[in-house]
Image (cartoon, rainbow, N blue to C red):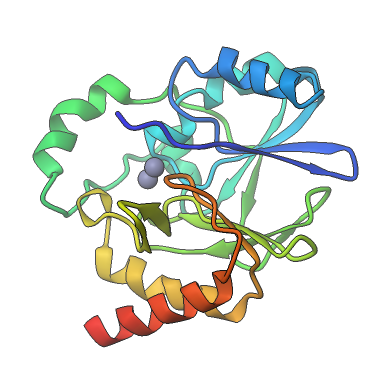
Length: 218
Ligand SMILES: [Zn+2]
Ligand SMILES: [Zn+2]
């Protein structure tokens, strides 16, 4: 299973973690906190971008260890608490999913607060951009002041180019592509990907040309 990036956002001294990576990631997270001069106990909240196991594998354990609040989009929360099962991806990899999903299934985790498109999350400077398609409640998180976008899996930067989510892992690929036009409205300098290298230059241009390309493809 590929490992996704996670991000620590420090906003006026308040610590927020975006995603937590796969199972058994806590020691790695603790080390990263140490390196950044923070302690894990200071963690105030965790915002999963969506419910896939490479993003929330350690969520329940980390919440338990730190007492951090968990905030998730309202359409994604039931899959994180596991009151509902995520509809199976419709892409070609469904058989792989069916076979491996039980192996990687994260522990259920309570959600303390649900989020909606356009919400600004107190103490973080982050705004929620709902990006349905990769999963029903996938989100990007936008930090206006820093002109930074945390893409989750709505946008990836793999194999040498930026693009929409990888179709085999999408709930509804066409919808995921349509959601990308929401990003055109934002002024972005830095793109932080869950999968792929950070882009620090020309982000607005890259987003615009991707959206145009997706629209042409239909
Ligand atoms: Zn995903
Ligand atoms: Zn992922």
